[in-house]
Image (cartoon, rainbow, N blue to C red; front, side, top):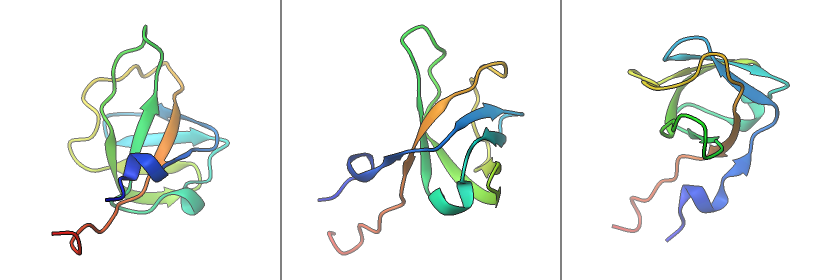
Length: 95
C-alpha cells in the first residue's frame, strides 16, 4: 500500500503562519505543489514547537494557502518553517 509520506516531496521556499488557518509562503509555488485535501508536514528541529501535519483547504496563490479548520493550534508566528508536500491518496481500491 502506498503512503503519502513515502511519496511526499520537499516544498519550495518557507512557510510562516499568519494565524491558525492562513499560511504565507516565501519563495513558494503552492499552485504547482499543492491542491485542496493534500497535507503539509512541517520540518522542525528538536527545539521547535511540534506542529501537527495540516490539511490544505484552499490554495489561494503561489504564496498563500488556507488550512482546513481548525488549522494549526500550536505554532510559532515568528518562525519560518520548511515543509514537505504530502498528496491526498485515494486508498478506496485497497479496502
